[in-house]
Image 1 (cartoon, rainbow, N blue to C red):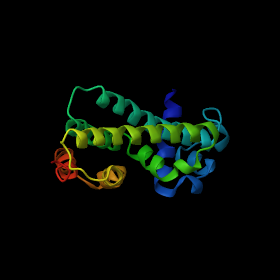
Image 2: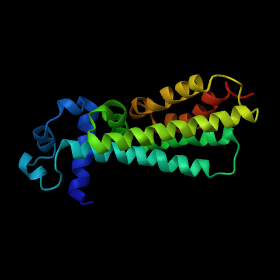
Image 3: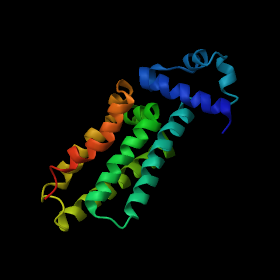
Image 4: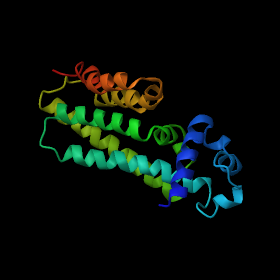
Length: 188
């Protein structure tokens, strides 16, 4: 990827996060980059391509992280801790893109939409399997897996809102305390 295309994606992610995908035009993006709108098309085919790249990059980060966690020879509790750490890591490194994924995924079209939905469903199914493994092995309380997953993912999906407002020391505290906070209530 060229440096200019990377700048376009970074700026678009910030604008989409601030205003929403639908409210940002290619002219807005060009103005933010101090270039002509027509010049954008030398680097990118349009907003849909930008949206696809931003969202699928984050979705693949989650998928790859999940594969690493699943391959660990660890308890379900440790795997769940590592998944929480994965969410924090992605929220820190791809804050704006994660916001776009959470807020604008429904604007994806065609194959990109289908790929995102498949990746999301697989990730959630894999997370659910780790929770079930923990229940089966007596690591977690025997509670509704759907309720547990909803609780975990609701919190984890909104970390990107919290991070920009906090100091580095508060973020370090989050990395240490959030896994315990989310999982100790589940621990048997």
